[in-house]
Image 1 (cartoon, rainbow, N blue to C red):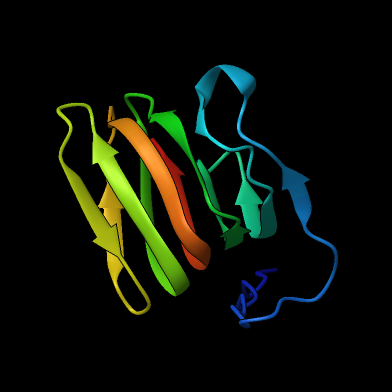
Image 2: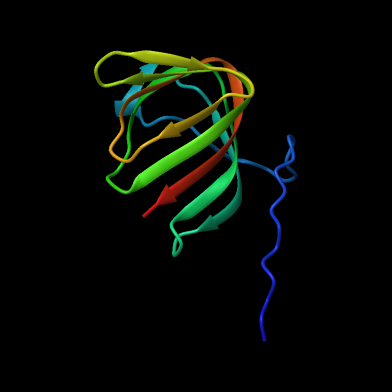
Length: 122
């Protein structure tokens, strides 16, 4: 007996309460922004998580593991990704971003933002 996988819908305003957190104290660079995550699919066995994320302005250090990748599309607002060498790129609505395994730098939310994200760890 086979089961057809269900389709996951990415509505701009997902139903249900989000998970709320803040950057870890040791990673904060500017502010202590509230981050909200609506996980729409999370399967540790497959190493895949996807959902909608939003955040207030602030900046914190990020360090991806050797098998961690993230792809996201900015829906609203503005963010800036800073690499370890000090280069920065800004991304706004409709722009897509890929962060590769081992990426180190900082993530800055310039204007309150919302994004669709896919994180793969393989």
